Length: 95
Length: 486
Picture 1: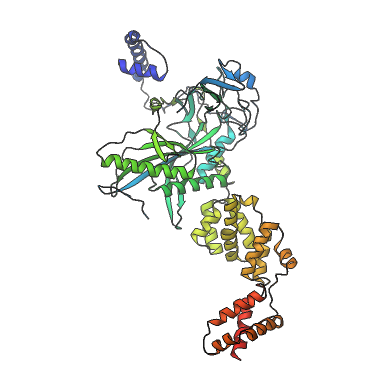
Picture 2: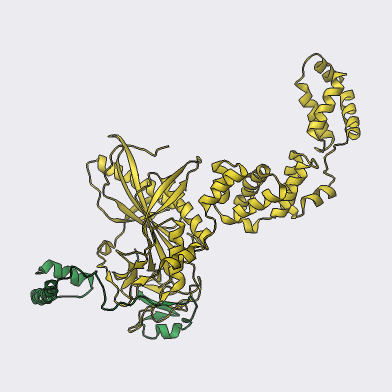
């Protein structure tokens, strides 16, 4: 499998990573290498195995519906680069 | 009746599918123990998971699962005993994770059915495609500061059910009926309060058109986040006409997300096109598959209330109501309960329906009150009907008593007693009133004798006037006929 330049540019944009044009070619090569490495998994016969997203047989643990968290706006906002009263503050985004 | 758009090249029909986001009623959020209370101080209902602090892990709320299954059962839908959470990736200031935890190809609820009650009394089934669980986003506030947006994460992580219909609706009215019915079912179930103004129920509409008789599905546009049933209907109407105009002028429709401007009554393209449909879903590695068994589903099923469709059927057979009348009464469970109480206590389902549905609902609508805030209790309305039935007051006087009940909040029997409004059923008392009127109108008496029988009505009116409406009309007519025949 090989990726093209346009695809890599698009993926970078969707992930909001700025990639200068000069870096695109090396990145295409690098990502294609990773993809090909992963593709080796296709060599394993999985006909009798149901699709899975993890390696364990476990299922989700549930918690009770009780209010046990929150009421800590100072802590929640303590890393905010910009804030106003108890709001996070960001450059204006309007539809 | 079919909804047709008359174009220059022919007739068109509209194809509508709705996606509803319904906020689940629960104390805490989907994956954190922070409160879901509406209107709290900014960022006071936020756990570190909701703020996407590194290293925090989501843990699912048992009630969120139960409410989704409950809603699925209410929609007679397939419940999936195994479902998977996925990440839907996009960037927005009020989405601190950079992705929304949602469900993609393995939702908790599959196909179901919702029956629309149309205004003409007819019914029509609409397919449900799926229902899945997902997180709500935070809230951006744009109007406090000139160059900044303020972010409040209180809503971030609150449980949403996204309920997707099949593209089965063919008119704005059907879309309205769908929303009304879905809201009603969720309120019966106690899974969502259905408050569109507060945003606990939000709707996206997928709209396309096609020539009448065609079965193709043409390119659709999605109208996002419309916040009232009326606006959803208006937006669909506008959008369908726009599609017809574009096609008839030789253009083509782009699949896009649009916004409804209720002030201008039009839809327009949303600027943030780059979001569009490239969410790169993948299974959330923080969350194992959600699994439960038959016994769990059965235990929820055992607690379902009588739902609107069943209640409507019962009202039709038990109280002989028309489908339309029954539909009006069962829309809100509290209204249906109120009606049943009045019908049982007064022993007259028919009068109960007319006094509840016509007289009382008209007052409640005009004053924008819910049945819980009704100025007249079910007990008092039942008493009023009993007074009519046992001939204590006439229908005409009952309307006056009803008005006085609204004003004073007093019980009808007290009002009738205090104001001397009891019907005169005593022939002796009526005899005198009638004799006086006959004596004063000898000319008209003569006309009746000459065959002008219609004048009897006029005499009844005079007697009613003389007795301030308290005469029993039937008795009055009988006595008059007897006397005039002499």
